[in-house]
Amino acid sequence: MVTDTENPVLRVAPAAPAEAAAHFRASLAFHADVSDVAAALAAGGDPGFVVVDSRSTESWEQGHVPGAVHLPTALIPAQAERLLDKAVPVVTYCWGPGCNGATRAALALAELGYQVKEMLGGFEYWAREGFGYETWQGGARRETDPLTAPAGAECGC
Image 1 (tube, rainbow, N blue to C red):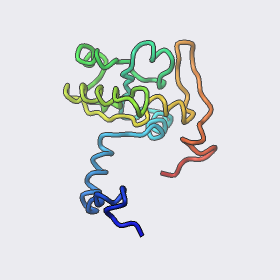
Image 2: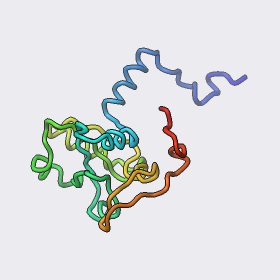
Image 3: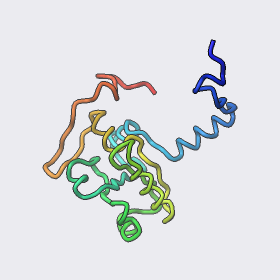
């Protein structure tokens, strides 16, 4: 049997349940996932938030979430107040999970007084999960990657 000191998962003991609950509740206050954002946007009407793409113009033109506002991180201090309403929560995204651009954009917006969440997975997972997106040439959609979403079903999470 592997002891706790030999087991890399349990080398540091899990947090107490109350501490874990507080941590995960806080995480949900800062993050939204791609499928939840897509479901809220697809429901029709006002989703109660605005999506901000914090990438470059070249990246935006390759593909972006329909209805998103294009606001590169470097331009947030100068343009956020012109493009966004502080009364409306913002969901930021960048390329994907290997990029912290959405985190930097969320920080810049929070420092200006916006309520903000980061969309986990970014544009990469938006496309990989098969959600439609806009390009400079019009609408597009990729086949769903079976490793990110079950074919023809919701993940159930």
